[in-house]
Image 1 (cartoon, helix red, strand yellow):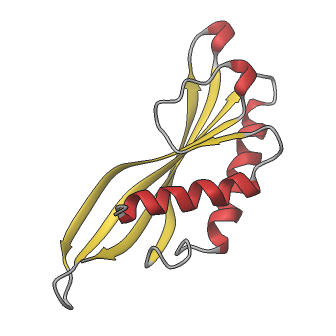
Image 2 (image 1 turned 90 degrees about the horizontal axis):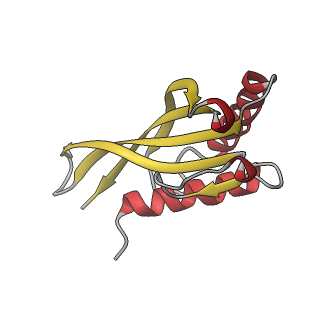
Length: 137
């Protein structure tokens, strides 16, 4: 049996694969090393989750932090390239915030933008933090 969290990550990765430009890698992991020749890349993973008993029946109401990490190669137009991919993610995620009814809802809670690496291996990063609410038995 697949945990609902895993099913949600898979659904989001599939959704983003269809929305990203040709050549953009989408992976359902937080540990994929990304070399300059593999960029841009989008990583999908969950970071934390809270839960509480549901008011109806023996169920749990859960709220997961689903992270979508965008990585692009360092360049003069780094911020514009990050923003272009962020927009593609946001539009794709808004099409079905329930991911085929796996979740009750989801929304973009925060975006963090920065740099990773040094000199020749520097990458621009944006991490979109989605709050995903769902219920399980």
